[in-house]
Length: 388
Image (cartoon, rainbow, N blue to C red):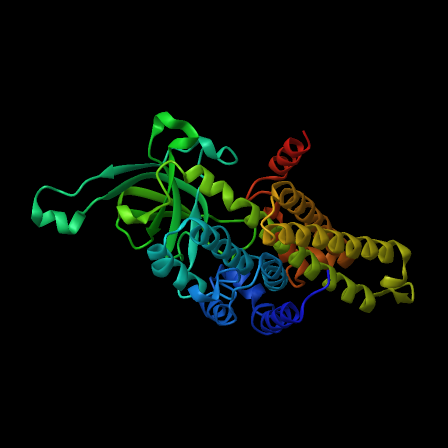
């Protein structure tokens, strides 16, 4: 991909920050399960929280191709940090940009884009993964009390009840976009989308998941226990929640593909460096064809995934449909990344299996990319449908 001058400047600035402020500290964050707040402040100052948000709303005013570049660079430093940034950019910002009204954009999108707030997206439930149409979390409309003493306090609004599962930034986010059922009889057309401040009474972080990887990003179960929000926090109209949720998945899948590439590239660079330094039978193992060919395959697969990802991003930037292309990019990039990271461990030999070397951590971090925002099998279903 040929980059513009602006894209090159953005990529290089983020890469320099990541290599100085993220990569050296990622092992410690991983071991301590640390959410690195200070690093997120630095990324916010670089504009990483609002890449595609227009400048008039406090964002960088760039595009999805640039977002893919940024997420690749951050993921090359730490997978968990990149996931946190990815979720805020898309789906959270993307939904508010497309469906939020002016008041919502000023109140919520502007601070999100500036990095003053962190966003979460509450779609998945304990019994629902890929089948988003089977949600049980409800949002019940309530009216202001006839008693004036309580009317000011309550006002018109909604009361949310239910459980959301595997929510990135569920603990540390300032607001969540929540998809809930407002009309059980209407099926997919009975879902609506809401802005829920995480400080709202009834927003309960029930559990933090103990995960295989990405320990620098929190993943939470959220309980909504009579969580009351004002009516103006409804995004779009009632019944548009399913459409709103799906609208953001294309961009989210492009982001995950970019993350996969970043982690794969990082593991590849570690393996390449090690292969040039490690000697066996009187020469660097890089010179042994078994290792050299493996590295050649790894480099080729990374470049192929990058091309797929930026093609999907270019389509989205042009306003063209890219459901199939985004699914292809996520499918190929996420599965490629696990293979590349596995090969990087193999090149390191026994050292690749211990935490003294970073490829072990990267391998754990990248595994989830085949699961969230739709599993690999779901991506294949989407691609199959597009071919029909």
